[in-house]
Amino acid sequence: NAGVTQTPKFRVLKTGQSMTLLCAQDMNHEYMYWYRQDPGMGLRLIHYSVGEGTTAKGEVPDGYNVSRLKKQNFLLGLESAAPSQTSVYFCASKSSGGLGDTQYFGPGTRLTVL
Amino acid sequence: SQQGEEDPQALSIQEGENATMNCSYKTSINNLQWYRQNSGRGLVHLILIRSNEREKHSGRLRVTLDTSKKSSSLLITASRAADTASYFCATRQTGANNLFFGTGTRLTVIP
Image (tube, rainbow over the protein chains, first blue to last red):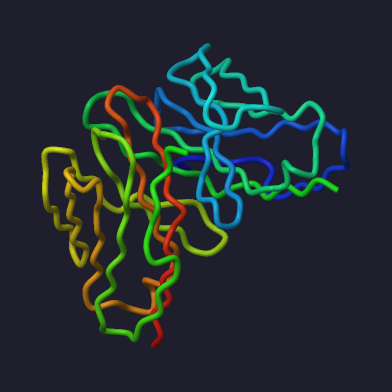
């Protein structure tokens, strides 16, 4: 099992450009999450999904959109990138059910917006 | 913010010593988890303690939870250089589907 994978690993954008980050998991998990990590601020939740076809906002959703068309994939879109979106983005997944509360993280995508 | 806070922000110890990190949070929780992050990598789950538990062990890790003080501690015994990483606590509020992460403790273990 590959676990959680993220594409791309690194990206540099100019202000106003758009891009999509792809997260894929092969563990048949229901829940998927997108976080951003900035120095000194820990991880902050952007959006999440509790199942195929569903999405919900997290703490910092502005400027981002997401889609969960397939259970194994969760896409994070930036329609018009801003320098404030320079960050490291992590995707995570977990199974449903009372005991399945551990989140499994991908390796991250380092995004720089100039 | 609903984030927890870890204390200290940074900790440097000699190999073989014990390391203790603390986490405080603001709301009632279903469980509290500790994660580890090596530099440039994703987070890895270490241990989960439920709100009705007070202490839990896993190998060299010992976690305590005091729901009356809304705090938790992570103890790593007999530290090794390979334990060098950032450690984050994360809480799941009752009824929530997501976790709130703290700001992390950066641990350095000197060989």
